[in-house]
Image (tube, rainbow, N blue to C red; front, side, top):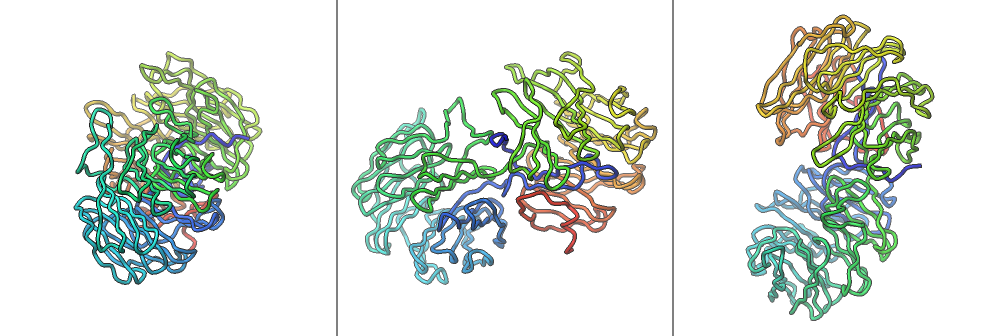
Amino acid sequence: MLKKYLAAISILILAMASTVHAGSWNGWIYQNPYPTSNTLLAVKFVTPKKGWLAGEHGTILYTEDGGENWEAQESGTEQDLKSVAFVNEKKGWAVGNGGIIIRTEDAGKRWGKQKEVDVSLHTIFFLNEKEGWVGGGMGTFLHTIDAGKTWNKQDIGTMSDVAGIFFLNPSTGWVLSAGTVYRTKNGGKNWEASELPSVMIGAQSFTRPSDFGWEGSVFFINEKKGWATVGVWYIFQTEDGGKTWQENQVLTSVDRISFTDEKNGCMAASSILCTEDGGKTWNERLGIIPGQKEDVDGYSVALWGLSFADKATGWAVGKNGLIFKSEDGGKSWKVKSKSYNSYVYFLDSKTGWNIAHDFKPGKDAIVKTNNSGDTWKIQKEFDAHADIRFFFINPSTGWAVGEEWQQTNSGATIHNFFILHTKDSGKTWVPQFEEKEGKRQRRGVGLDIFFIDFNVGWAVGSEGFILHTEDGGKHWVRHQSGTRAQLRRVQFVDDKRGWIIGNKVTDEGSTSIILHSSDGGGHWQVQWKKKTEWMWLHDLIFIDKNTGWVMGDINEYSGDALLVYTIDGGITWTEKEFKEIEYRHMSFVDKKEGIIFTQKKQILVTHDGGKTWNKQKTPIRRYPWHVSELFKNK
């Protein structure tokens, strides 16, 4: 079984096969990664089993089984939530951008807005059910003694962002802001400031009044001993309650810190470092080596939240839904988020195929699951990296189209382009077509394969590459496409009528096209073409010979997207733009009902074939489900 193969990618995956409609897609949807691809900024566990994660776009996730399953909770906001505090299994708060404070009294079943201020809030700390503090931009520091019904401003003596708050009791507490730690002994009536030591950060000195924004945290184990971090390669420690601080240089940048007792604690940012001697020495726990190895199991490590439920059980969360868990006090950490690369393919809710990247150094493999992705078994190993797309007619019979490639100093070098076939669910993969290195000079970003039945199929790739078979792949014939574009998707509705989408990007801009054939791929004509500064078509779906949709990105950075659809077989196409939706994928179940998936964990739903769309939250589910399920309770 292969478990440690996953690659980080922050997208929703539709994983598929079909015999009639939806192109290479059959409507099976998988949350990728599970439970979210949104960056997680905060974590709080009140028991080893029960805890909450918070992050981008108002994300709140809850588990009551130690992270095996997660439930999305409706926060009531799309603002980034940066900090979360729970005092027991029911009562909690979260704060974030837009100056929002939200609260729950029923473990997150219902969240309600408590207050909103005119600056972003970065951190929240509650001592008990009644008393708590919130910190944010421009020195904002708020205090409540009635569970947040009223919040009163306190002046701690700074106009910089408040990054960290920690109180031992109602009287004694510390606040971190811009490289300075402020201490109170009378519940915030008076504050004493202590600057952290100046240190060298690269070629520059860390000096006051540097503003480190909301990066950093402060943690005290008793009235004397505490630690502070500000997002740089140093941990600061005090033995006199914060009057004086000593620096200790570590191997990576550090941001969040948590201790379970005077000796044992961890901190996290670009890795996780832990101590067993009260901070005298720190040991890196993830195998990160700056400049050499900066990922774990394919995940790029950038952590923003850290929490220990008890001396053994700890959690760290971060970029693109990354979740780590420790069950031995921080000595070892395991990735708990569940992610697939962009070519994951589920035939049904249990059976799927995927690519295991770097299962051996520099080598990939085809892997299969029979249990919805919990475990994977290697089916075929490659001698290099491989980009592959799958298509199955039934659980036994399928094809894979792909390229083997290797990264060199001058770029990606192609070893071969291939088509593989299986009749036994992938136990054996037999080569049906192969081109060696030299005939194709670029990586085939647009590889795709589609079969209308057991015999008739097509495969496409870069440089306008098209192959066609009428005997199940025993013989493949090259067809002329009339373009040098990267052909990304292919679909036929019968053995004659089909469509291909493609993209070509140059220094002068982008050109995207929709090609149509009415003679089984013998001849192709351009039905739609658009030139822009930047555009990339991703998805192609035809329900029947007349009704189809194409969708892609039209801005590399803003998240704008374009939907192009037809109801007359492509004679005419209608365009519809979407602003800042961060498009990820599209699926239709019939002529009227379709879904667009976004990275923000929203879905856009249409009931009129794409003319109008309404926003909904994407259901979080551990296992694949069919897109038609999303329309049952419309």
